[in-house]
Length: 240
Image (cartoon, rainbow, N blue to C red):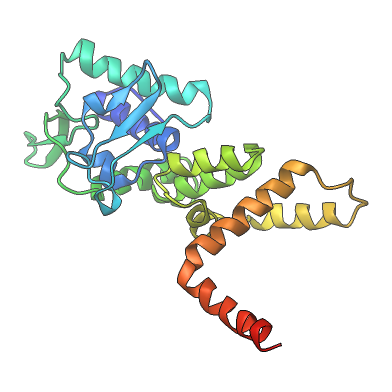
């Protein structure tokens, strides 16, 4: 992506930030500079000021998507703080300043000091970026799907995937699996071909992972439902 003007720098940083944090577009539109901590590599999605889903407050630590992605975001934050001298309550991704040119046409003229009122401009930035790169359009939310697929590859234990899930703002790991966990077509073929080969003995960490997922499934079903399922068996034991 080009980064000649400050609008172009903002647009590039916006897409890098979406990949780095997996934040939803509505949350990104309302974030302030103070919500980003480059020392501890995290974003505080405070529902009192950030438009999070279900008004939920949570912390997102930067996902491991490459140092160059983080550097783009860090450079943008430094530009706002050091070059423009903006403070904590100023927007992380400010709206574009639109003026009437001498040709009596509306055009971009830098940045305002205001937040976007909606997430629509963010989706338009994504659309333009993908079009410029000669790619089909992927909306901001698709980056969350990408991060889930990355988590499925790099997480080696239930605890790691639980942390990855919480980083996306999901209270339950099962939400991550059911809503975002679809296996890509190409990867599906690779897995099935691998399964056709002789397999080594199952590892204990995979067994623990399966047990953890089964336990969470039971939790979501609810204790009341489980009691109903148990009741016939208990009655049968008493009768027998």
